[in-house]
Every structure is written in C-alpha cells, then in structure tokens.
Length: 567
Image (cartoon, rainbow, N blue to C red):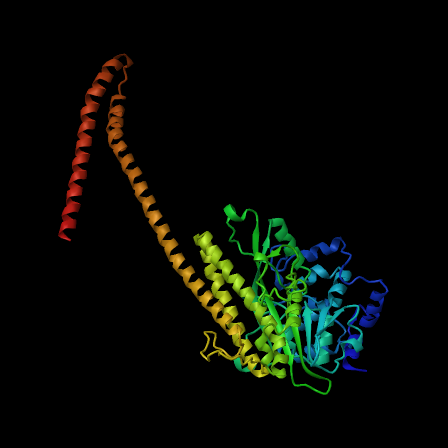
C-alpha cells in the first residue's frame, strides 16, 4: 500500500474513513459543497475579531504553559492521522506549529470554534473540503489538467505520479484532508502550511496565532515561499459588501474583505471598495526520482463571488494575436477567481516566444513560479492605480492618514515578499537568464536576472509605492497647512466679532449705569422728569465714554507702528 493510500484511508471524520465518505458521495448520499445549515449555524457567519465575535483569547493566549481546557473539545484521535501526529510531535520544539495542529483538527481558524462546536454538518464539510487541480506537463505534448474534489481525491491511482517531466498541484483553500494527504505524501515542511493559514498585519501581545518572523539564513534553506499582495474589489451597495463578508466566513483559511473607507459619495454613490490581503504559497521539489522530474504545490486563497474585481481586474498580458490566420476567438483568463486564473496562465505558459529558448530544466521550474508572480505584479499595479485615484479625487486629512498607514504596510509586504522569493528562487534554481537585461540591482535587493521580464515590473511597483508614500506625506503637509490657515482666518473673523461686541459694550454700559442710578426713584409721579434728566445725562456720558475709547485705540495703534518701525 502506498503512502497516499495510508494517508487517504487514515484521515477520519466522525469515525468515518475518507474512502467510505467518498463512496457515499458518489452514491449521492452526501453533498460536499453545500451544507444543510440549521438555526444554530447562523453564529458561524460571524467574522472573527469583531464585536459580535467577542474576545478571541477565549481559546487561551500565547503564554499558557499548558493547553487550554477548551482545546480538549476539538482533540482528534491522531493515531489515524500520520501528518497531524507528526506536527504535534514537533510542536514542542517549534511552538508556532501547534496552531497549525489546532487548525487541522477544526479545519479552520480555532477562533471560530465556539460558533462551530454545535454544528456537526458544517464541521464535517470543512474537514472534507477539497478543490485541487493537478497539471501535468509532459516532456512533449500539451499539458493535462485533472480536477479533484472530496469525492475523487481518495482514488490513489489517480494521484500517484506518472512519469511526467513536471507536475503542478494547485490547491484552493485548505482543509485537514488536503493537508494530511499532501503533507504525508510529499513530506512537506509544516511551516509551509502554517505560513498560509492566516494573514495579519499586526499582532496583539497575547495572540496565540502570532507567527514569529524567520531569519533570512533560515529562509534561504527552505524550499517554499509565499507571495503577498492586495486585491481590491468593487461592490455596488453596502448590502453587497456585507454579503461578501458573510461569504468569507465560509473560508477555512482566514481571509476577509475590509472596507477601505475612502468612498467619495459625489462620484461613487453607494458603492464600496474593499481590500483583501492575499497570499499564494509555493512549494517546489525539483530533486527528481525515477517516477517524476520536478513537482510543485501552490496554495491560493478563495475568491468571494459577490461584487466585481476593481476595473474588471488586470490586463491580459499575453500578446494580441495577428488578424491573419485567426480562426476562432482567443480565450483569456476567466477572472472569476485567483484559482482559475492561476490554472489558465499555467496552462498557457510560456506566453512569449523568447521563453522557448530556455532549457527544459529552467522551463519546468519557472512554470511553478512565473504565473503566480505575474498575477501578483498585475494585482499590485491595479492597487497602485487605485491609490492614485483616491489621492487625486478627494484629499482630506482623515483619508490621508489612512493611506499614510496603509502604503508603508503595503510597501513592506512587497519588499519582504520579494526578498524571501529571491532566496527561494536561488535555492530552487529559478532564474530566467533572459538576455538584454543589465545586472543593475533593483531597490528590493535582487538582481535583474533573478526574475527575468518581471524585474522591470517589480522595480516599477516599488518605485510607484515609494512615490505614493512621498506624495501622501506632501499632501498631508499641504492639507495641514491649509487647515491651519483656515483656522487663522476663522480666528480673525471671531476677533472682529469680539471687537463689535466691545463697541456695543462701550455704548450700553454707561446707559445701564444711568438706568440703574435713576431707577432708585420711589415716586412714580415724577417719572416724566426722570426721562428728561436721563437723556440729558446719558448722551454726554456716552459720548465721553466713546471719545475715551477711541483715543485709547488710536494711542495703542501709534505705539504699535512705532515699535514696528524700530524693528
């Protein structure tokens, strides 16, 4: 029995083997993509790290020496799960892997456990979830695509490797089943899966899910890497955006669209742009053996189907065919999901004629890396254009502060990703060696021969991000100065109002004084005489008061002019 047979038959869900579960599916007794959600599962639609979700540290924090008592609720019999047992055994020396073990036992982020514990149907669907495509690239002929779901992945002969030059396995989302099969079959480093299951821009000091940064020396020894980028998506209404957020709660890997809060009501109306931090993890084994040459595994995120890619997604980078000899309409990338786009570009590789001049070894490894790298670069360029649009349309201090926080974060994501990818490419032997490129170092630290034609795009993306960051800082200074000038004008206007009130006080204070003085009259029959005396006294007293005030104002003005002349 092969390793894959052991892995497939050993991963159990509620006491039922995967193979039995798959046969039940083939008979139509089990649905794999749709779960009959009862009233209790409505709580599983709550997004983690929101007010509705409550304190995420109910599963314990990173400083707990012993496992939290709640973790006993999701404990699995690891005797039948070889790879999960292996991860738990090494987690004593590599503590950050314990979170991967928890993920496998729940088959999603452990923070969601309290919303799933009462819903056995949804838990089983998450554990069984499989969407895998295997692409075989024979030494001659066209590539071959094979689709695998939870109903077909159990079939060992179909997944056993044939004698092909290159094999690429593309996985959308992750589940216990997929991690168990791939990890045990190819002896994959568990940090490959651990680095993919979440994506946080920062961590709280108590977070159990904190993934410590790796040393560059350590990264240079691993045979996997990840590409991080941001995908903007357009939603016509706020209701559509909320549907997308609800849709993201069904992902096993924790990803969610976040509203960027930069809408301009005058032009955008009720529409919303949401940004999703995205990861693609790439693992390569090009050591080769008697059965196959090189093999690669790429993990990609699910894509919400609600809404639209911003500006209908990136441009098709393939060359437009000539009108001569064109017999049928060409097919472009589907743009319905990152998963399908990656498969399309991998099957179309190489896209440009000069790629055919590369040796077979270089092409076999480049097909693992170049399609995903091109997609990541295209998404970063779309993101840069979107930031430019927002900085031109509506510049307010609130929005500028938002971009001042996000742009450095995106720039760090990009430079960190490319720095790690360079070390990975060097170890995996991924170099294009394209001619006509000088060896001038790029700002991200790689030489122009590392990634071939994409080097110019990488340099362009980094240059745009640097310029956008500088532009945001300059605009912030200008807006701040403008606000200060407006505050000064408002202060002058308020000073003028105070001056007018002061003149009114000069008029009414003596009148009020005389009114009080003459009001001490006790005999009302003499009131007519009081009026005569009142005006006879009020007019000269008021005139005298105004004269004194004017003289004082003029004398202060002259003193100010003299002081200004002396200076």
